[in-house]
Image 1 (cartoon, rainbow, N blue to C red):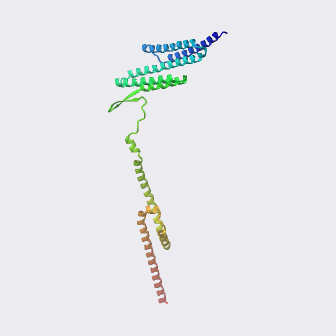
Image 2 (cartoon, helix red, strand yellow; image 1 turned 135 degrees about the vertical axis):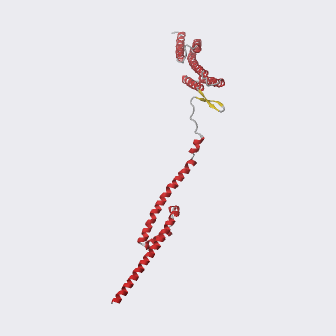
Image 3 (tube, rainbow, N blue to C red; image 1 turned 180 degrees about the vertical axis):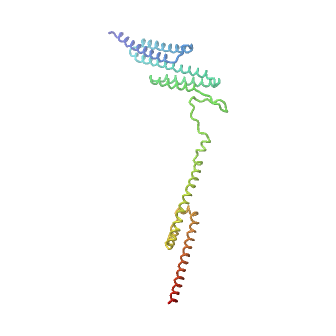
Length: 292
């Protein structure tokens, strides 16, 4: 086979690869939501398809006019250009949809619409720049997705009434911040005060109950055995007071005075009883001696 024939076979293979890339690009364009009854939509679709056809023609011509060594490079370059133009057509379609959404939004005034349109155009330019700088099909697809999302977000706005006029926010309004009143209620300082008061109130009855329980016990011990109570009192005085005793000192002091008084009264009663017994014994003895 002659050299010229081999070269032509390789060029034809490269051209077939261009046709395959164009077929995929046209399928992408057809998949966009074009309105068959909208003349503007149909004009944009025809414009995108014409750009793809122009890429095909230029790529094939470059492959045919180049040398055999240049065939792979010319083929890859032609395929990349077709993919880029199809991606840019998707960005243009997203811009057209955003424009229609803004135009039909009667809640926005002319100034707001113009401002949003400027932002959309800038987002489209950025997306097309990313498409041109992409190194492969994956990079091109990522640039298209990012660009379409940015354009769509800019067209989805709501107007919140404020004292200063219109406030434009994205459709997905973030969760409102907690109000000042809620923050005051949630502060640890405010919450901690009732907690301390509650603790004090709950501890005081417990202390009183404990004191009331201990005092009668001491009184019973005093009536049963006075010397042990006296020694116990000395031991109590010599022992170091604990924090609990200090906390309840004001409650126990009156009761402690009652214990001392009861102890003294018991001693007096015991003394009187002993004295009466001694008088009775002496009188009895005197009567017995008189009888004898």
